[in-house]
Image 1 (cartoon, rainbow, N blue to C red):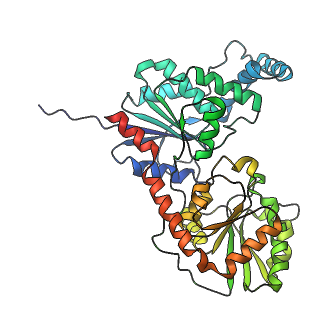
Image 2 (cartoon, rainbow, N blue to C red; image 1 turned 45 degrees about the vertical axis):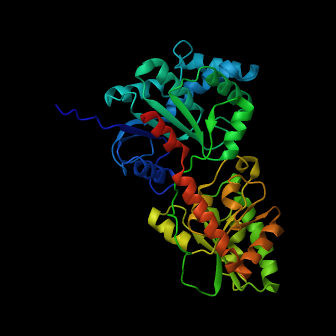
Image 3 (cartoon, rainbow, N blue to C red; image 1 turned 135 degrees about the vertical axis):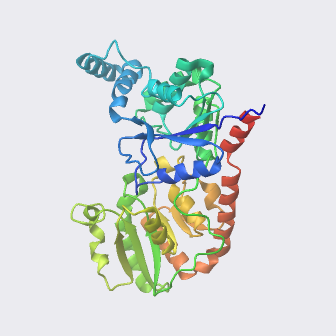
Length: 412
């Protein structure tokens, strides 16, 4: 009698999944492509509208409140502990505090979907809440729990309180089940967590972002302008407030330079370019007939619209804050490498394995960034071989994903 093996299930947890925003939707597609023999199910957040299929469960923001107060009560300084105690008493939660934000909910999904040890739950943008919830899941279900794969993207891990975050990490480390496997996107972040917290974690878990890898250099319609792209929603850690200063420095240099006319393509909302907006100072360049022109672009584009806009630029500008981006990665870097675009980035950034192929220039001051842009614009062909090497490296990194190795070993 032939026994038909049950098809394995991959449950993808993405609380921030939303249409036309961020790289989260591309992670879902990538994971489904990487594991085509798995059925997939989604656990999403409140912003999800069903565009990738029905969600098996919804993780609410309110679920985080009690666990946050619990962590402050347990690990905070005296003032934080007192404030957390008062809040828990006021909410009537002091004697009914959940162990984790989502552990019980994860266990319900496992039961409802009839998951077993051969199935996988993966959180591609994990934080301390999902880590604690995964440990709680294994405590609830024991040996019946499926494997859990967690992928961390930044050192804050969803908790900006250094004292509390460190205490939570050490507490989880002391009771981490073998059925939970930990990864980071960047090697730099993995090194940090291993060194400071003795956490068994593997770096290099990269997923494709918004732009597919180009086999040949992008051939775009040429005009009289060299276009530099500033992509994504403006945020302080991405150096958005530096764009006006860099643009001013560039305009001063471009007048005497030989790079031709330059165009800065900047994503943002209408309010970002208006009075009191982060890009208010760029207004003088928007209708300028000078050497540098600013072209505002909507930051709410469909995936196809974003890909077309990305393809239309000649180089990428990343004046990111290295106090955060010395450990965490950037999807825009992956997109730039995939599209074979030179990258002008802040010295000291992470993901140097993607940036050290002769495919970009590092800078620190606004003047440095302006000079680097001028260098790339004056001779774009000088970066062609470097961008090809970087694209080949990215292709190898995606194919050699340590997550796939872990899945294959577990199946043997």
